[in-house]
Image (cartoon, rainbow, N blue to C red; front, side, top):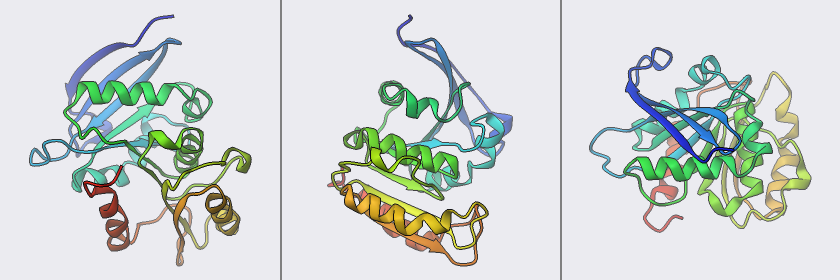
Length: 227
């Protein structure tokens, strides 16, 4: 079992053709090679806050590229985005709960970031993974953005302690996640989450957000008093 070992290089990644990213291969204790893409905002944001973007589907580079649209929006708003990709799929970070906090510690050590807690962001299965990870250790994260996302196991949501959660699902979701939204909101509220949830009118599984509404929610997390 090796301790954290890092191999780092800077390049313009073809899969994220419009953004400059640092690509890092990180080995965490169990020797699973985590590929990590790090996107920094404009230089004017000297110490940006960190958001972890969990991709859905197969959790490979192709899926990460397809879902990077929300990461790009976050970067344009002054956030640093890290996209971890495990060869064992997106549930690796759910089933191995120490892995993501170790990764977050490494990112904070390697980059000049705001020391506050990171935000979890996910699209589709990535949104579901973000919710599941937050349920395990809500005190480690500033909040969750799941657009969309669903709850895999309601029994895991016990004490969210006011964790901010931004949950959006298409009104005509292709997988009928929209039908689960009322139950999910009840679970999150019962666990003590600070939930902002809504259906996106006329939308299916993947959709564009109401950016004005999103910015209002995100602005609260960017305030100096936010954890």
